[in-house]
Image (cartoon, rainbow, N blue to C red; front, side):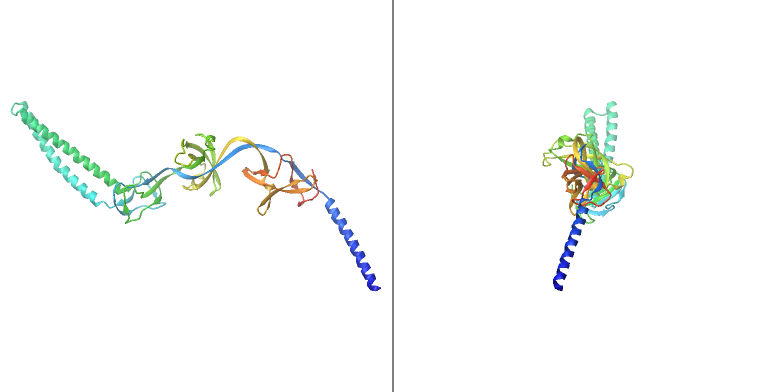
Length: 357
């Protein structure tokens, strides 16, 4: 009997506890909180077209030589600041030096012969005027004089040619700038046309990009674009300076050059070879934009709090697009006219009863 009474008491207590629990859950579910909402609307924004490219110096050179010879000495390396006319690389050129000495000796010899021929020509010419020399003697000395004059011009041209060859043995800076690449080491054999050293003049940069044929008609020379540098998290104004009219050698991609117009101290953050993203704003389209602080992140998913059809809080998963200042484009997941929760004093969860202020 005592055992039966105990069972009856336990069952009665459980039923009472279950009833109280149901009442508390019902109260929590029916209790609503006040939230501030905003109706989703489409906003006209500029159409954005994005392309990628690399930064290059506008003034850059790759220096080479026209002679074959062993690299004797290297006077500048990557990162060195150089001045116009500064010696960068010396190539061993003993054969050219020997030829130069030979040409200089020929000049001395031919110059002496030319002076003698000039003296003889003047003497015979005066004798011919006084009728003390014949016409044939004057013609012979005139021919000899002209031949020596031609020889003198020839050896002088040979000297200029050798001196020109010597300039290719001593590679000098074409302008003031910075060494960006060095392709040889001392002792290497330099060949005609082989790149030896690369130089660029800092201060003026451009972005080289390629535009697909489907979007090339959007661009015009002189258009203003925004160049975003991910490495420095900065945006620089740019102007389209050149557009290639043909994509014959670039696989349906039209090479385009954008001149950068950095402001304040942006120049010090720019380096050749940096990756750049070009943003072109052209035309207007309607987009749904949401403030970034309203975006809910759950792992790799993104969502926003809305009011469902039953008047409860509903977390909608959305797909995001491009940024527009402090707002982000919603590609899918929201529709025009939806009620977006923009402010709540309490933490939200799915199914929570809410009242819109």
